[in-house]
Image (tube, rainbow, N blue to C red):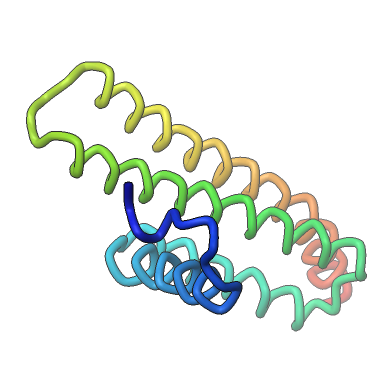
Length: 128
C-alpha cells in the first residue's frame, strides 16, 4: 500500500500531489510542451480575433481535453515502466491506445479550432 493512497490525506496534500503530477507531465513529456504551445497560440489568436464567449468555451474545452489525454497517457507510461521493463503485448496495446486517445483529442481540437477561427479569419481577409 502506497502512503499517498491513505484515506486521511489532507486537502492540501491532495492538491500538492496533483500539482506535482502536473509538473511531472509538463517537465518530463516534450509532447506536453508542444500541446501547451499550441494552446497558447490558439488563446493568443482568440484574443486577437476577439472571439465570442461561446467560442472561448469551445477553445478551453478542446485544450483541456487534449491536456488531460496527454496527462493520462503519461500516467500510463509511468505505470507501465513501474510494472516491468520487459515487452508485453498487452502493455504495448494499452500504451498505444492511450497515445491514440491523445491523437483523437488533438485532431478534434484542430477541427474545433478551425470551426472557431476560419469564419473570423475569412471575414478579416475579406475586409482587406
